Image (cartoon, rainbow, N blue to C red; front, top):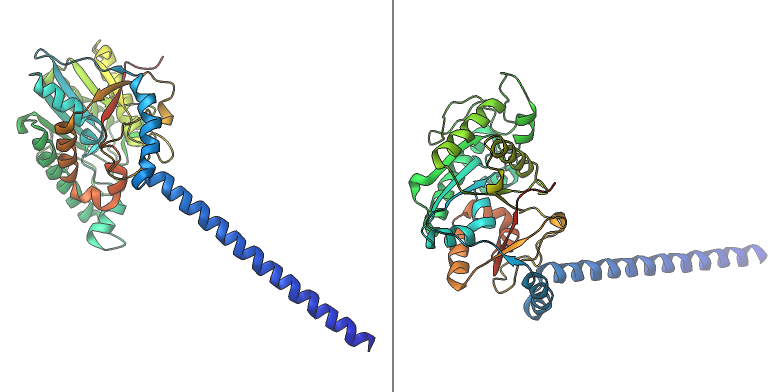
Amino acid sequence: MILATLQANHKAGASLAAKALKLARQRSFQITAAIVLLAALVINAPGLLSLGYLAYYSARVAVLEDAPAWSAADTLLVVAPHPDDEVVACAGSILQALKAGARVHIVWVTSGDGFEWDEILLSHTPDPGHVRMLELGQRRMEESQRAVAILGVPAENLHFLGYPDGDLSRLLEQRGDNPLTSRHTRVSAVPYDQAVTPGNAYTAQNLESDFNKVLDEVAPTVVLAPSTHDAHPDHRATAHLVELLLARGGKLSALRSWIVHGGLEWPTPKGWHSKLPLEPPPRGKSLIWQKVDLDDQAVKLKSQALRAYKSQLKALDRFLAAFVRRNELLSPGTEP
């Protein structure tokens, strides 16, 4: 009798423990689901939730100085690590410079041939291979030409360098004459016919030489380039390259910087929110920021130019769309 009672009590206790564990798991799942849902609402801000961002961001952006106005005497050079960066960060500046009568040139350091996840989505294969990556680079260059044509930049003012996407830091750190081989395309020299110097070996010296060719040809009065605070390694490498070469030429004062990869989930909300302003990024909190205001027509043209990057929207739609706002941001000079 006693043994039976003990066994019954044990079974009851085990049953209660199992029920308690099941309840705890259910509650944990519910809490996790609630957190995920809340995060999704905060990140994407559908409907009326975007009004909260409007109130918060408007006050923070309104106090920023306006970026200097353009004149017909200016020559602008936009430096893009990858095709799409020039539209994402600088479409408003490009439009305003052209409207003022300034000359506008764009130079792309890479052709975006290292974005494997993008090619996986486009080609529906888990292993695109180096030939497809080269084709992606060609496609992205063609998309960039269509995109900036929408903004009004003449085709003769476009400069492709064709250096390896995803490998710029390694390239600039690698000294000597031995060329770097791209991890993604398996080539060790510029593979694109429309590049500044087709067939140029992937060395730091050649990259600097090609970039200097563009600087000498364009003779910019203003250079818009990525900031060293950007989270993307290619962007930081490009920033260091631009600062180095401008400093050598005594033209560092011409530099104004921008950030695309500015911190966790920046910019929020994701998606198309063209009525909202763009606030300074967390990674650039130590920088001075100026705003470039976009009117309705500029927002429309920027949106159209961005949509020309069909390959990129396949993978990064909501991230890229988050930059189509009422303003863009530039940081004058360099941080001490």
